[in-house]
Amino acid sequence: MKVKKLLSGSTTVTVLRLVVGVLFVLAGYPKIINPVHFSAVIAEYQLLPESIVPFVAVVLPWLEFLCGAMLVLNVFAQSNALIMMVLLVIFTIGVTNNLLRGVIHDCGCFELLDGWLGFQEEISVSTILRDLFFIGLILPVLLYGSNVFFWRR
Image (cartoon, rainbow, N blue to C red; front, side, top):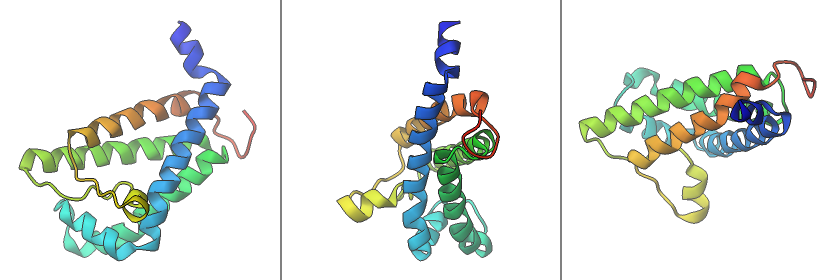
């Protein structure tokens, strides 16, 4: 009961909303700036038909960025948390699929780290664990966050 009270508290929900929102903004922004590179990363996953990879490379980063920004601003937080949860589940399935097939490549998750710090992340079990951790972070926002326009609860 204490755990539920802690997770449903407005301070906890606000902190998690801000953390996950900023993470999604940081994940989406570099992909928006360089859709050609992100398109190549998506193609490496070998999960989508080549004909729709460019479309996904343009739409997905904007979805990440806008959902993250709206989460930070507390605009329809539950709806955006649901979208983020679905994206994280899809990402986790995609990474798991490739690991099981032995296809190792650039994750494409946080290109900001690649650009600024020279860090390139290949998919691995830690990628799956990180995504599951992010799902855990977003779950309280989905369950207890607001779903109204701007700072009303």
